[in-house]
Amino acid sequence: MLTFEDYGLTVADVQCLMSTFLHPIILLAFCHGIHTSIFFVALYYIIESTQPIRKRITLAGIITFLWFANTVILGLNWKLVDRVFIAHGASLETEFNFYHAGDLPISIAVDVFRGLSVFVADLILIWRCWVLYGGNLKVIAVPGLFVITETVSVCMVIVSSVETVHTVNASQVNWTLVYYAMTVVTNSLCTILILFRIVRVSGLGASLKTYRGIIEILVESAAMYAMIYIALLIGYAYQFYSGARIGTAKPYLAFISYSITGIAPTLIIARVMAGQSRPDDSWTRPSLPHMRSDVLSTTESLQFASAPNHSTQTTSTSTGHATADIDLEVQAQEIVEKRREQDGDEDRAEAESGRGGVCARAVLATKVLSFILRILH
Image (cartoon, rainbow, N blue to C red; front, top):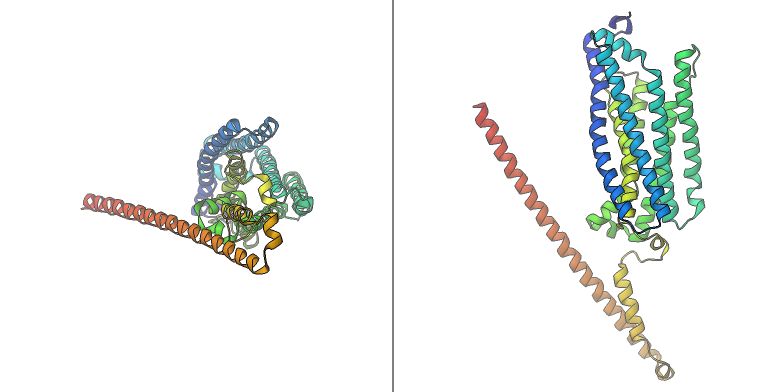
């Protein structure tokens, strides 16, 4: 049996390494609980939706698979915890030796379910890009190619893990790093395309002015999905090129990414099924960046109301047309100003409620601190 010194590690290093193995799995269990809650809420919205039954069954199957895959990954990691700390928990040395040797079947199963989850999540993002761009296949061509490359990469990850165990001359290519890079490129590209479309349709000011607009940007674009994989790629690259094995954030980011891979598409589907997303045909309508749709409809009604009849047209002059156009612009400007005043009142009310919440939390924190001080004295 090899000792810690054979690996160039001290007892403190091994203890830190084993805690870094256990704690991310506990974090995964917590994140899986959040995923489960979101899954059942999304399933409820799908059941209550009035959309076609075939679409509802398809989306329900997708989110169910993502939840099932995350559940399997959690179960496999807990099985590994049981083998390390229970079956081989006679001493720290036996725990470390089994952990370092690894469990190949569990590792392959986790890689398979992780790859399938990422593949399905990326397909959901590509589907949203396709919807937002009015079914334009040119937009999703490049993300589709990266998804294919990503699938090949995860297959090579599994093959390389088997080669590492059974052969001496294993592949020198770090396929895990390639896989993370392809995943980052795919979901980042989809996120940028979706963000661009939202800003193009709604306008940047309108999107960031209300909580609803901010939620639309964060959920529709799956921004947290892209950010977690960017952070994971950076953490893995740092660990690989620096040779650091202890005290890195990569294990925590990897286990968080398991749940985020399922949560981000589930939130998109829940938002669509709940009717909170824009109608599919609204993404291709022409819009003005500084005026809302209700203002535009009111302006259009003013145009029809102000349009002269046939007999008047024969006798009207260019001066009369100019006066009517000026009146129309004034009325439209008044409507816009009223909308801005209403939005300003809403923002002030939200700000006041936010300050009230901060004050309440500050008072609560003060009471808790004083209580702790009394206990200490």
